[in-house]
Length: 248
Ligand code: GLP
Image 1: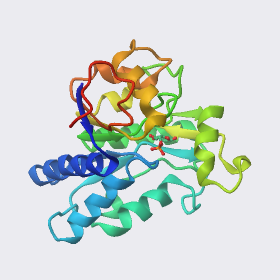
Image 2: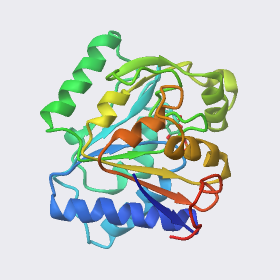
Image 3: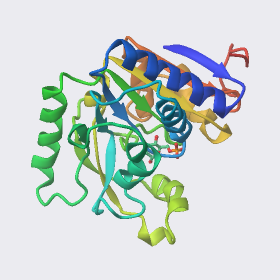
């Protein structure tokens, strides 16, 4: 794993955007795996700015989002689909037919999950997967204890995640108790992975993911087994790491 420690969140976002943008210039048909949550908002903001300056064309790019609550309608204010529209899709020229999302309203969850896996495969696999990390080390919605071999599947969210995500909802009771998520094995098949983290709330998970044992109890630790992962953190998220100078 390559580790890059930056002074602050904006620098993490800028550098992550540079990587995505460089790849998309080299390879306009880029297949991007995208994440939601507060962490990638800065990355999306940078991508939108570069696009608005006319320095980027996403017209041939394809996207797959990692996860979606279940059940939830796509136009629900807290759906991940809506989040992506607001932060990225409404502002750049990604073709709507090349935006892929798990459906939070699918009646047959199993076939929805297989449909998604097949769509990723048909697109040629994910070139760059952007990941945040949960305070408990989850990636996507793969909570601690999720077997590494799972592909896209339905999960019950942990109390910790429901609590953490309740900040976006009016009441904690409104947070959906389930989600559909790409599995660890789906994520591990991406060619390149960017793991972003910011803030001291993530410091413990980052330490465990990078320097702890590879265990299903800490889902992000599986990334130690992937050949091309860049971990980009600000210095507050790096405070628990051993032997790392707090400089980019
Ligand atoms: C959510 C998402 C993850 C995200 C994580 C951290 O539950 N399913 O994909 O990485 O939580 O979110 P944040 O970036 O807001 O801390």
